[in-house]
Image (cartoon, rainbow, N blue to C red; front, top):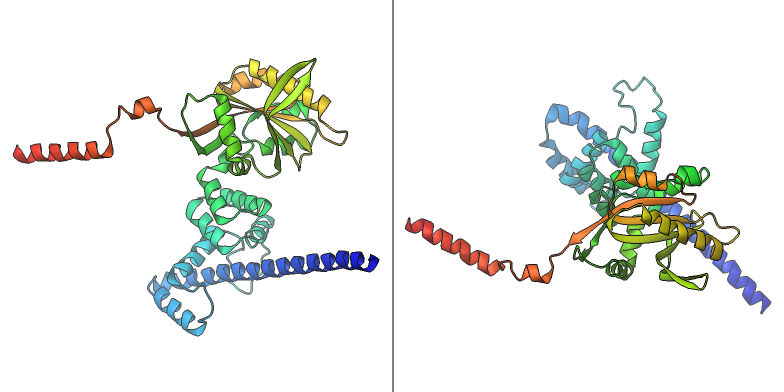
Length: 357
């Protein structure tokens, strides 16, 4: 029996090592391919100056004939190799092969980063991202969060680089370093809830219910590290019942996160309410090894100066952000709008009248 238990633990360890080795091997292969594509793009760029672009058709045919089992030699992919070389200044472009110049540290760092993501992700970044600094942001986020290509496309479309870490907060005054910076980077402004389609006049509870219904997409928008604890989380204080809209625990920050939803413009009184909830969570839920709880107040609109003043002298760490979603028209407005068929008929009538005139 003891042997069986010892063997089970031993085989688990072996399997873990095999998976880790497979992962390292896959990453090594990927890095080699990405480096080759960059070198190929460099070679194409040099010859294209003299030969134009027509030689790519012949190059594609010759490479596919010589290496029929290898992918990546289509004319389209060859063009991407050249774009890859032009887009990322990851190595010094030296014409004299006898001259040796070490790459800049920042270029070498970018080169090492870009080799860690798949070629499909790189092509997406080439297509959708203009500058290198923004490209580096999405490369780093892809590595840290293990994004698939669809998730990366969604984050680029929602302009995550413009929203991440931009919320108004008092973290610098209420949290020690480096937690204040880490906490700030978990916030966005605005939060993008385009996966919801609701009436602008909806109740806050409806918004809350929809976010929980689409919890996987909500967690993706919140970012890595958030674990859902509960909706309308009950707290009893002085024989009174209180309910937190949404309660999370952040695994990396090791703290509770209280989220309050307000389908209105921010007003200073909201800061007082979430400050009260944070005090309660720190007293009733927080464990000895947990960090101070953080509050996130999500509103439809806010004035940044007003929000800064509201948070200035509050002792609990709170961030204030806006949120947006896809609005749908209420039924009473829908019924008053023409249907597609009615619009098509109206266009036909206009066309007929025009011909008659």
